Image 1 (cartoon, rainbow, N blue to C red):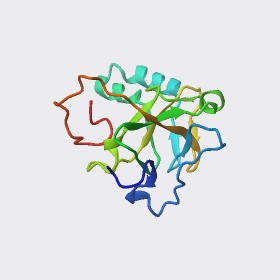
Image 2 (image 1 turned 60 degrees about the vertical axis):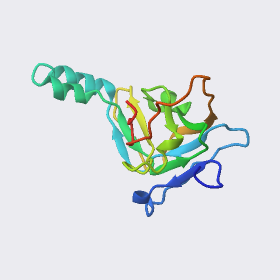
Image 3 (image 1 turned 180 degrees about the vertical axis):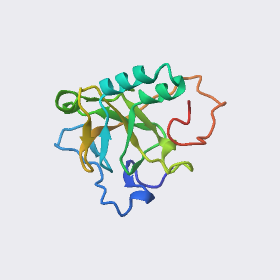
Length: 173
C-alpha cells in the first residue's frame, strides 16, 4: 500500500522545477484526466518515416527498423493507486481528427507497481505516432492523452509464480 491516499498523480523528481500540471478532468462527468506533454517535441510524419525507411532498407536493415518506432512523449508524471487498480492511458478524441495523432498500442496500461520503480521512478510516457503528411509539434503543456483509473479482477487460479517489478517502461515484456 502506498499510503492512506487512494489514487492520484505526482511530478517525478527530474521535473520538480519544470512547472508540470497535475492532470485534471475537464468537466464534472468526465472519466479521463487530461495529461499534458512535459516537453516540446516534434512527432515526425509516419509517411516521411516510411520513405526514409524504404530509402535506407537495403543499406542497413537494423537502422532502418528503428526509423518506424513510435515517439515516447514524456509527461513528467507518475501515478499511485490501489493494488487492484491500473491507470489506462487513452487517446484524446481530438488527436486523430485535428492533429493526426494516434496511440499505436491502442491503450497504455500503467500498473500499480510501476509507481516509484527503481529504473525510472514510474515516469509515464505516452506513445504517439503521427499518421499525417506533415511533422507535428507537441508543445509543453499540450494535452496529449487522458488517464482513466480502472479496477481489475483476478482469476481463481491467480496464485504464486508472480514476480516483483524489476524495471520501468516495458519491463514485463
